[in-house]
Image 1: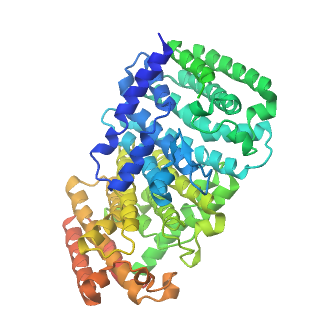
Image 2 (image 1 turned 60 degrees about the vertical axis):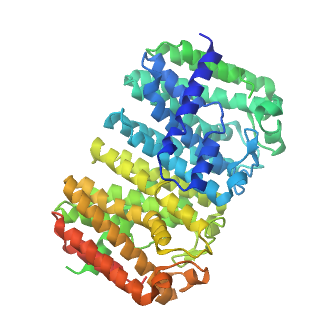
Image 3 (image 1 turned 135 degrees about the vertical axis):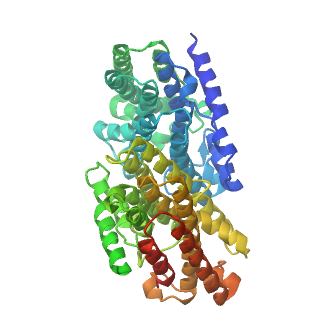
Length: 292
Length: 292
């Protein structure tokens, strides 16, 4: 299996399916445009792909996970729109394109984010294929990952830490919440929809936690070394903001060591789950070798 | 039954229960404080009270509805926080107190709103007393009422209509979404938790729609005539903003006529449902006679 082709295939599936949730809806045109603008701005679609590939690793059809996977991407997209706002990170560019508020104004950007967050819950609640028990499990997990103890907590502490020197512990606290919880939910979404055993859920949880840390370390390394054109933002921009990063706290070599350690740990946990590990191992390797 | 005592009793119940959803949670302190500040800023608690009183009208215990009712109040509170933001309605005061962003800054206000919206879904999904089917019905309805076709649509069009003369139809389009849908959901939440028949759900839906219009007309009338101290904002502030209101479009007498008409229609629909109508009639009368 060629992992790049696999990722491309699944990305196309998600890219095609994502806008369909807005098509039949009576949404004011300016708002709808703003929601679609950020939903369709691309990105790796890592979260939805994780859900689909976990399903396939359990021998299930990926298509079963499409609604839940798209809900995850909506939450991720909402978080990017709000994080980019002038009162937050004040970013003008995202994935090489003007940020939502630059295109549609601040009020519409806030509302488009609110609407995407809400839609994510609606898509799961109104799925025609998931059982009520599966829906409740997905919605509960999604709310926990996205909310005041998860993603919103991460963004809050990240903002409060601007221009502050963080300890490694503080840095991990932020990343675990800001990106880790939703990545974990993405993996567990696949497990829930595959009706995985408790034991497999716990192995996959550990897999996703180490994967999440590896993902973030690679993100920080790319920011130091990356090609600004591939990154869609200026390389070194985090350092410019005096932001604490893994390379800054551990040196570049130390960060790479930790990256390898967490990659290995994620694979160890994966092997203990009752799944075909090939695709997820491929995705893990891709995450640490990606260049954007 | 004294309706004012009834409303006070239920309001106390909601006031006491609302903060409990945050108590055991590991939420960054500044964020938690901001969430609690707006949740505890008071208000009439009309939405949760509607859920509780519909349950009692079906002969069920109000306490059964507390979790769902508090979720509605969280969504209402989030919408007020975001509506007040500088890029939206730019309000400094809400219920006579500084708005959330005035107290905690714009970024935290946005995040507190995001967190309350997310928590509302979590509270329902993680309820220990609702069945999975009830949870899915509640979550689906809540997302529809709050989202891009509901409350967010209403706020979007309301903002686009600033300083514009609206037709009565346009004004109703906005109100139906901005406040109507969540009021309707509040009534239907009670029906769902009482396991009401399809027929009763439809009667209560009509009841709530007319009640919602009556509520909004009274809001507009109060803005023209109300006591600024009771209102917590300056009387005439909507007119000052050149905002279209029912009295402006229909004259004050015409608005009062429509108020009476919708109140009567709401009661007619209520009588056709298989419920004890006394409390809900009392609430409807309260809504049109309230002075803030």
